[in-house]
Length: 82
Picture (cartoon, rainbow, N blue to C red):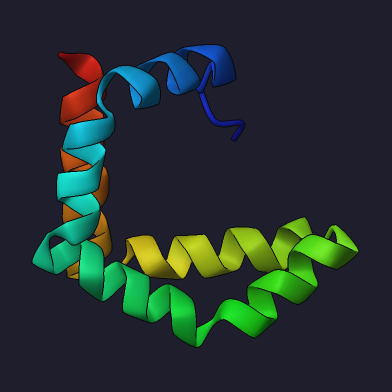
């Protein structure tokens, strides 16, 4: 299944809502997700360098299965739909 994301729209929303995104990143959930991502940073850097989309997808899928990741994505989706 392909994501239903228009990159130009995502960039526009991110620019318009940068303060809200900063608040999300600074939130408890945002900090927990950041911590999880930092634990995977070497694996993610290698996957990006090698174009290993499977590893990237699996890493992000696993992240979104966490309570914090799911809440954070829900908050971002609500922000985008406003």
